[in-house]
Image 1 (spheres, one colour):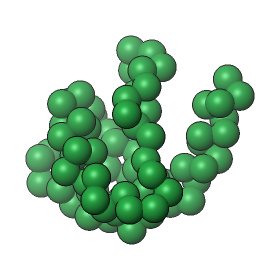
Image 2: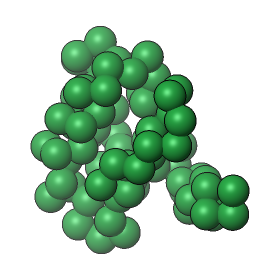
Image 3: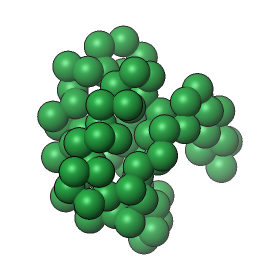
Length: 77
């Protein structure tokens, strides 16, 4: 699910469990936005997704467990 929060930023919700089952959709959604950088926080799936995006020329950063903190910040904004 894509939540647009501005011209320069987009947030995709990631399930807490079974994220790898959605990796194809996450990859497709991210590639469709043509980002310069993708910040990932989806557990072990982030490692695989980062590789897939790198192959497509998109730089990816695995934010690790910081994603839950980012979600809270976005909710409070």
